[in-house]
Length: 103
Ligand SMILES: [Zn+2]
Picture (cartoon, rainbow, N blue to C red):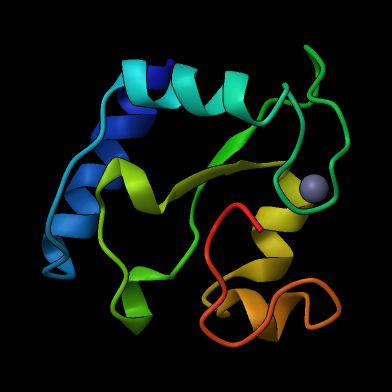
C-alpha cells in the first residue's frame, strides 16, 4: 500500500469517527526524521521489510485528533499492541498520565 493510500485510509477512518484534522506525507516524513527512523515506542529501527505504521498517540477513540501533532510512527508490532490504549496504559513505565508525545 502506498503511503498516500495509507493517509487516505486514516483520514477516512478519522472522519468516520468524527476526529478533526488531517496530516500529509510531509508531516509523516518530518515525523520519521524526528524519530530518527525508529519506532516511537520500542525504538527499533525501521527497515525496508518492517515498514512503519501511523499511530494516533492519543487514540481517536479516546478523543485524539487526526492532526499531525497527534501522529507518531510505530512498528507494526507496537501499533497492534497499543491499539486504542492511551500511552500510559500501553507503556506505564515510560509514559505518565497526560504525557506529551515526545517525552
Ligand atoms: Zn515498536
